[in-house]
Length: 272
Ligand SMILES: C[S@@+](CC[C@H](N)C(=O)[O-])C[C@H]1O[C@@H](n2cnc3c(N)ncnc32)[C@H](O)[C@@H]1O
Image (cartoon, rainbow, N blue to C red):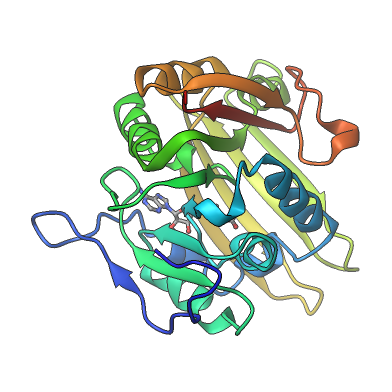
């Protein structure tokens, strides 16, 4: 576990199962080279970091991100709260993270599965954002990850989970199983076309086509499990955490959670 006073690590810690392997869905193999195009470093990152800073009970107590990816949020957040342990199952995403580390971003990359990760010290904040929890495709795995997060929290510590807002996604499909939509990005000539399919058992298949201004495209697919806030609350309760609050987006102006909110952000507290 790093603290703000420890040097920036240049290597990745690996926490494997007893079989010596880290289960990985291959997200990084598809998205590592263009993840920063899909999720640019813009005002939304500032809003998210500010909110996470305000939700941290005590930055000196430490922070863990479940599914840290390229460090999109962990890197700027670490400038504000000090050391962050960033857990991810993708070697490719962690490679990008490692390349982005600087002297003032004390993020420790840890190659591990969030369903099995444990550590020998507790922290004040664990966060699992950008729908990482939904990448676990069964309720059992999702609950297992929440249980692991709860086990990392000190009494009084907080868990923050952000995922897609299930009712809003269902609404988008207007009663059909398939929907296609295009999201233009601010940079002229760029945008994301998404082909969405609702599958049984709350599974959600997305095939994306990313358009660059020079006419090139990238294709990536992902499968998630649409997860309602009530389900997350149940996982948290089963793990000894108390549901605290729900938000519908990161900026304070749009934080009120409704069925139409773009996101479901839920916070949980470990009783003191
Ligand atoms: C959409 S990205 C989010 C990355 C980062 N949190 C962000 O906000 O940019 C989801 C990340 O979760 C990771 N991931 C998915 N399942 C995982 C698991 N079981 N254990 C650890 N990481 C996982 C993927 O490799 C990917 O880097």
